[in-house]
View 1 (cartoon, rainbow, N blue to C red):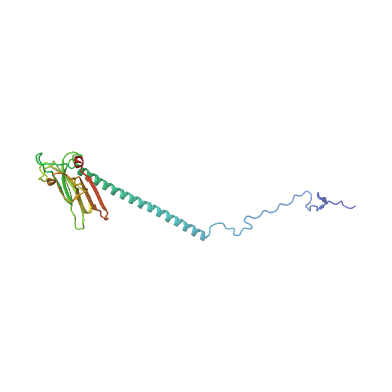
View 2 (view 1 turned 120 degrees about the vertical axis):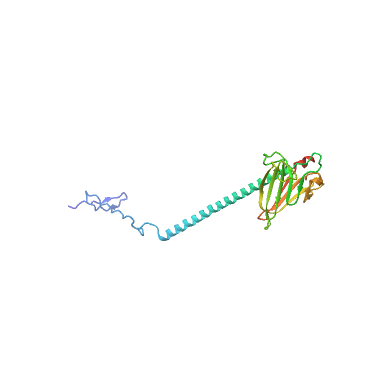
Length: 243
C-alpha cells in the first residue's frame, strides 16, 4: 500500500516541503558568531600618531594658559605700581597745598606794614597757619626748596620751623621738621599770581615786603623722570577772602 504523502498545503494552495528534522528531536542551535568577527584589527588602543597629536595639543593649551596667567600677573603689578605712584603724588599735593593755602600775612610787629613772603623760581619761604608738627594748627615758618643736581634732577624739600623767629636759624627751644616731597624731578618752577592785576598775570618772584600783599595763588610745575609735565595750582585763602 502506498504511504500517505506528508506534504502540507499552504493557505495559497501550494504544497510545502516536509521538514527533514526527525520527529522528536530539537533542531541544533546555530553556533554564535565569534567576538570581533568581521572587524578588521581586533587589537584595541591608540596609535603613536594619536598619542603624539594629543601631547602636542596638551602642550599648546598649557603654553596658552601659562601665557594668559603671566600676562594677568604683569598687568596687576603695573596697576599696583601706578596706584602707588598716584597715591604718592596725591599725598604730596595735599601736604604742599595745605601749607600754601594757609599762608598767613605775618608781620614782625603789628605796627610793621611789611608782610613776610619771599617767593623765587626754585624756592619759597612764608609763614603758614598750618603746622604738621602741631597737628595742622599753629604758626610755622615754612621753606620749600629745590636744588638741581648734575644730571638735571633734584629733590623738592619742605621744612617747617616753630615758633616763628624771622632772622634766626633754629633759635633756642625751637623745633624744625623736614620732609622730602618729591625726588627725581626736573625743571621745577614756582610762579605767583598777582591779585592786583586785572587779568591772570603770573610773576616769577614775589616779595610781599614790597608789594604789601600775598599772591592770590602759587603755581608749581616740573617734569618727571619720564619727561611728563606736572602742574599744580594752590590758591591762598587769605587773598581769596580779601577780594
